[in-house]
Length: 254
Image 1 (tube, one colour):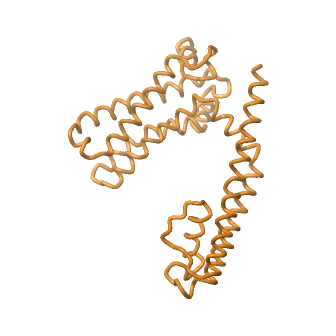
Image 2: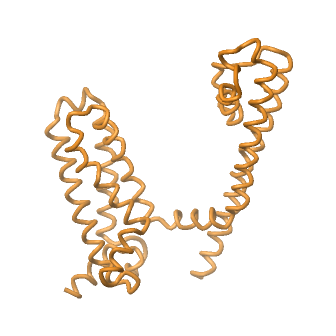
Image 3: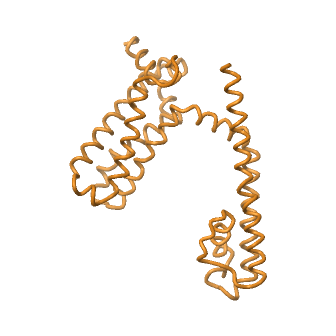
């Protein structure tokens, strides 16, 4: 049993594979994840799904069965890592981030039996299957670098988020003050004006709600210009942090 567990760990755990790249088993799993996501996307088209419902049901059952076996195998193989040895270690592994992602990837299939007569829940579960794509992050070092970058720059990111919240509130209050009497449906309260502020600050600008007074247009221009710089701030912070994370990683491996 120990040899079997060691072989599984060697094939399934990215840190257990000592050669370059991914193990053959993990490459196959990545391919199956992509195929499962593609199947879930195609299945949302009713005209395609109705032509071969048995095929889609069979494919989803096969994918769910394979991913369930893989999930159980990963729990078993995790015992090769001293951190996850024993029953308590296995429970600790099952509560780890990637193990929870693996569990979420197979839950929609089993929950589907409970929602078989509910069209909305069935549609929701089909979409949730796309979360399987997030499992690819387990096999990518870029995800760990991104997580390290976010953790290293958490203070700056929270600061930029706080500034964005203040600007949203300030611009909503200003538009409420100058536009409420002219457009009560759109700017009759600060919460109503908040939708306009979000669309403008993120530079989306749907155009469904626009100020018509001179003061309103002035505040709108200030908000739009401030939004360009404010949205660019976290982008620059993350770019610099990711660059530092990759440099540190290369230095450790070099």
